[in-house]
Image 1 (cartoon, rainbow, N blue to C red):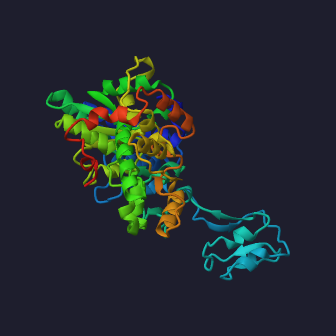
Image 2: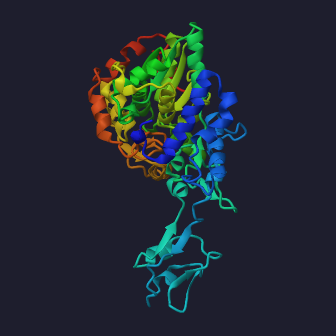
Amino acid sequence: MIQNKFDTIVQQLKSRVLCEVAKDYWDGTLEEKRHYIPKMISPGPKSTMRCCIYKERAIVEDRVHLALGGDKNNPNLLEVIEAACDQCPLGGITVTGLCRGCLAHRCEQACRVGAISFGPDLRCIIDKNKCVNCGMCMKACQFGAIINERRPCEAACKINAIHAREDGITEIDESKCVRCGQCSYSCPFGAIMDKSFITKCIDIIKGSENNTKYKTYMIVAPSITSQFHYAKLGQVISGIRMLGFSDVVEAALGADLVAYNEAGDLAEEGSCTSSCCPAFVEYVNKAFPTLKDKVSNNLSPMAAIARYIKSIDPTGKTVFVGPCIAKKMEMFREDSAPFVDCVITFEELEALIDSRGIDLTALEEKPLDNASYFGRIFARSGGLSDAVEQALKERGSDFKVQPVKASGLDQCRLALNQMKNGKLPGNFIEGMACPGGCIGGPACLTHELRDASMVDKYGHDAKEKTIKGAVESIMADPKIASNADLKSK
């Protein structure tokens, strides 16, 4: 395995587990070999990253469990590997060694709960039994000596769905979590992992190999252009076909379709939010239920193009691949389930390719050219808004879209609060749960190399330059043509 396929060693370890599970599942030997995987993957006693080799193996065993679908009784797609979650401090407002014991004591004056006192050296002391972590003392300190020491997973979660149990283990609040997965990528110990459907994907491929009654279609997210940086995109498409897929289709074509219809919704309703990001939609449902009717009722690009594929090939099987964990949740939604058979991530696609010993760099390039420029730029923040504006022009509408581009759930919260209070400085919220859009998804191979300019270049490479040109054949299909038929039920 090429070491620089990923940003971190955590991703490499996760991929090794997925790869070994997939390899044995392909061969039909997983049941007999499953318990050997922890010994095979864990480093030797002298190189273990944990306190002992036994703990290392226990963590790998948990990863194998998640690679096979995880705890069926846990409704969340994200699970905490408790054995791996034991290194981070409990955190909170903390005084560092930078405290000078100054005379001003602005920190004490700023504290409203009387949690601050001073030692013989006049340095600040915070009573954790009184402190409410409001951060006022932190803001008041002129030396920056007081910090909010938060766990990386907790800091990454912008909706406060992460907290520590009494024993210090991280816990996910199901009532708040929207499965954005940012905590998963942010954990430096790999203690939070998403459930995998990699074996389900293999079953679909195996079924098409053994039963010619159906074809298999892989739907690739437009953010694929910023992934697999060690190979060309055309070689990745060849690799997907070598796995056993009959065809590869751009989710960006579904994005063209969604943009065209979302523009119609916006012109009709006057204001709305996007519906493309399942984590954003779930956030609205959980945190802003009064705004549910403001969410566009169009299917996401994934579901829209899967629906089209099913309309022309009812027996076909569709597998979506992208950087998104929340898409796995969307797969089970009532409006998407009839059309999307399986969802995997870029990390899991890499594991599938490695499990078959496919060297992407040695393959010839295969074309991928279904969508327009505007469908492809959905992968970055602002792309959806640009596409909706273009669709309004192509529809001949004089409605002017005034987009509010919310990238990351903290920005989404701000925009939704403004809409709720009638103070939104626009008429359309482009809601993306991940910073930067889909190119910032938690299951990207390379977060450090993400670049919106790569997405724009990919868009400019499209043969179709208009949205209408891309969706013309789809709109001609009588089963798909009506705008109402393309919407979520």
